[in-house]
Structures are given as structure tokens and as C-alpha cells.
Length: 323
Image 1 (tube, rainbow, N blue to C red):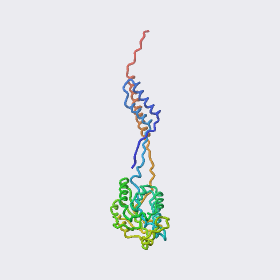
Image 2 (tube, one colour):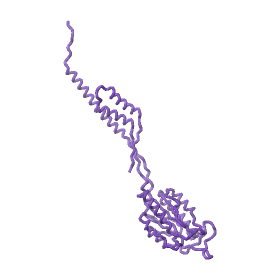
Image 3 (tube, rainbow, N blue to C red):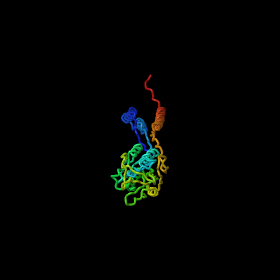
Image 4 (cartoon, rainbow, N blue to C red):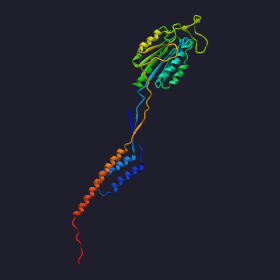
């Protein structure tokens, strides 16, 4: 689809010539001016205005992909059982960097969960900024936690997906959930199923091991979370993560080292360059003017021929004078 607009690039001397010709016909002529001559003057003036029609493809609004990323940053995500002793959040940062590379050109929004859920990054196409945010995110200090709920971001994710559908109805929508599945509050997690109908696909990435890992109280602190006098150990709950994947009709992948992410049905095509096109109708107007001038010449020739015939038909004048 393309939106067309008309612009004028006037040659004012041509417009003036056409106007003067029209005025001369109206003022100087002693009889009614033929419509044909006024039409010729009008076409000359339009040619002088030099109208040009331009069109540009309408792109961008209803295409592409929107990716909603939900990150669990509760204290357990600091457990050091990722890739032989790294905190789980290191894996999240690595995977988010790969995600924005795999879906370059998509819009990303990021929701972070700890005691509550917050929209940390509204929809943006700046994938590098999203990757930088994930690398600097870290995890919640242990003294600030009040128990973790792996589903606290469901409401915000629903709002982001609704906004995506409203703004870009034809866009593909992907949910990416990053967490360890560990639910430490007494209530069961809420279902992610209400999000499924808004999604093209979903990807649930799980971090941690069955053996578990101990957690620093916050990144770089050197102090570890304790429970009953001993270092607390966090274990991945893959069943909970698999449940999220099933509820969103997506797929689950356990992440224990950097590497390619599982493929999804969401694809991001490189944006086509919208090249404006223009159409100059001057040649059409020139053809119209040529036709009108031809008719006027033909009409004038016939008129002149008629006058000559009339003059020949007149009786000769008699000569005066006497010898």
C-alpha cells in the first residue's frame, strides 16, 4: 500500500504567460471568446504549476515482532550453579544478548520480578540497550526478599501484549521467560495460560541444577545467604518451568552454558527500504495541449478558408469615371 500526495513545482513565467493570454482573449476580443482558447490558456497555466505526484509505501506499523522478556531476579538467581560456578544471572545476561541478536529489528520490553514486578524497559528496538540492562541487572539482596513468586509478572506481561496488539495488530508476539522456577511463598503460582492467545510463540529458559547452588547476598558481596546457620542452597524447579511453557503453548529449554537458543515460530525479516516514487504528469498535459492547439489550428484554417470563399463569391466592384 502507498500514500500518494501532490506537490507543485511552479514555473511562474509559464503560469504568467498562460494568464496573460487568457486576459488578452477576454479583454481584446470583440466577440465571445471560444471555449477552446480558454482551455488552451488553462492547460498552459497547469503545466506552469508543474504538479508532481509522490507516493511512499506505508510500512512498519503492523509488521515485525514484539518480544516481551520476563526475568526472575530474586535472590535464588544468584546461585552459583551456572557453567561451573557462575551465578544464574550470568546465564540470563548471556542469553538475552543472544536473543536480541537473533531477533534484531524486533521491539523488546523487559519485566523484572523480585518482591513485585516492574516494567524496566518499555518497548524499544534498541537491542544493545536491552542486552546492557540484562548484563547490569544482578539479583535482589537477600535481606530485601519476602519470598519469591515466579508468576508475579503475569499481569504486566498481559498489559504489554495487549499494548502490542493494539499498536501493531499484525505483529508477531514472543514471550521469553528467564528463571529457576523456585516458588518460595506459600501460595501456588498463577497460571500463564491467559497470555497464550496473545502469543505467536513462547520460550521458557531455566537456570540452575538439581544439586543446587549457594548464593551471594548480592553481586560481589562475598557473603552468602544462610539458612539455620548453614549456606542456603537453591535448586531449579524444572517442573514449574515446564508448566509455564505448556500454559503458554511454548517450549522449555534448560540453560547451563552459553549457546544457541531454541528456534521459535517468530521470525524477523530485515525491514525493506521504503523508496518514495514520483510521477510527473507534464507529458500528459503536453499531449492535451498539443491536441487542443491542433484543433484550434484546424478551426482557424477552416475559418480563414471560409472567409476567402466568401470574398470570391462577392460581385466585382464597378469602376467609376468618364472618358
